[in-house]
Amino acid sequence: MKRSKRVICFDLETDSLDVHQAKIIGMAISTSVNKAVYIPLPNRKYRKLALKKLEVLFSNPDIVWIGHNLRFDLNVLRSHGIIVKGTIIDTMVLDYLLFPDRKKHNLKHISKIHLNYQQIKYDDIAIGDKDSKTLEGVCNETVRDYACEDADQTLQLYLYLIKEIESNNLEKISVIDNQLVPVIAEMEYNGVFIDKKLLQKIALKIEKKKEEVLSAMQEFIEGDININSPIQLANVLFDQLGLEPIGNKGKNGHFSVSSEILEQLIHSHPLVGQIIEYRALDKVSGTFIKALKRTHPTTGRLHTSFNQTVTATGRLSSSNPNLQNIPSRTIGNKLRGCVAAPDGYQLIGADYSNVELRIMASLSKDPTMIKAYNEGIDLHRLTTSKALHIEYSDVTDYQRGTIGKKVNFGLIYGMTAHGLAKSINKDSERKYSQEECQVFIDAYFELYQGVKQYRDELVFRADCNGYAETIFGRKRPLPHIHSENSYKREKAKRAAMNTPIQGSAADIIRVAMVNIHRRIKQEGLHSKMILQVHDELVFEVPDDEVEHMRELIRFEMENVISLPVKLEVDLQVGKTWQEVH
Image (cartoon, rainbow, N blue to C red; front, side, top):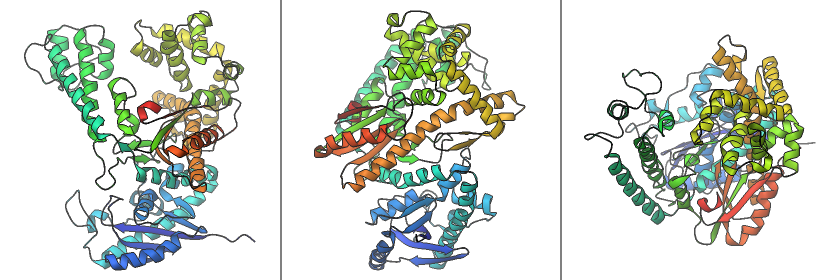
């Protein structure tokens, strides 16, 4: 007879939010509703003794550990030498699965929503300055009450949310997302190695280039201006140079000089291109270089946060700093060279090839698209030939990139002729009208009739069910699918078409991450998963494990699920992220 696992809810109280430096000042445990126990850890000697005994409990594989935002607790324990075994269930993840469009999933917020309970606020009991508040030094009884309340409320939330998960048939995706929690936690804890010397060289080059661009701009500008002032830029472009404004004046009484507007004006005057270049350089230096310099004083590495409960489609996001947003082109790509492998290690970059198009082909069962992939026909070139009414062999690389690629990816997500024109014209020397882009759309659906039928079917399902669903059972509620507001209704329809494709791609890489992480642990390897950027995973691998990890990564990523169009991975080995991207 199978023994049911023991459920324990726990919550750590620390003197810092920095997992690498935080001391545990206490821990609350709850195993039944309205009851909790607080274990104070008042000094170093007692803390060391207590943690040694708690390590035995945390290493028990037969316990189900419940918590809220468990990545933090897991990493604090890791920094104290404790690795949590057993099953991990995070109530933040459960709430996210049920309400993926909710902006906040923090404990106090959802406790009020689901349990109608107003919890003690951290800021009401913590001491210190606004940005450095801590529970260290707070009356032990106050911390006890606060911690026990957190543990008890988390347990009650678990009991409520797990029933909702079951009644909404979300058990499968719940297992996947909760298995991912310790994987992400370890990635955050590991961080990435930064080549600081190269970073400094790039920073100096960018500052020099900014000065050169500013100097060149003076040829067209009368007097001194603040290049970061939209109002002053608008005066120069539209008043001094006489360029034709796009759109209407804003609330400030001036025309917009947003990036989108400048892209449309780029061929009107050389200054426009210079402004775009300067802004790009300024963003790289002010945002990305600054972020990459923030290595941790204890580890010497850069630690980002991977947010699991933010995007409604299931994609992970990154913050503090956002490593997913580093530009992949021009000088921004050189910054990826600063994310490097230390001595004795290599980086492996593994990127799913056209995963969303492969999913679309598989789920729509479109015969033309499936045949193209299975016979090695270039889908972007095939689409371009149909859109431009030219032979497949006559399609140039330029046409393939500006037409075929934009059409293929745009129409997955329900892009209109207006949106497609904007997308194509951003990179095309020749400007295409909405009417021409509608011809491209019509040609696409004539070529891939199964895709059109599948998109219509997805909207019909969402109309009937009120939600969209991925192949792993992730659901995205679409309350506006029946809205009388046409904008909201059309947006919901696009989400109905988008979610099963983008969401399934997100689920696939989540499963791959869990499986690869499991095998690394089972096989006693020293390789580390350090980054996830959309469809790409990056690993830091000891030199003597490279060949084995190449095979392991490829196998696990390409065999997550069996589809009519096989998943394929592009895999590169090198010393920097730039080399393997």
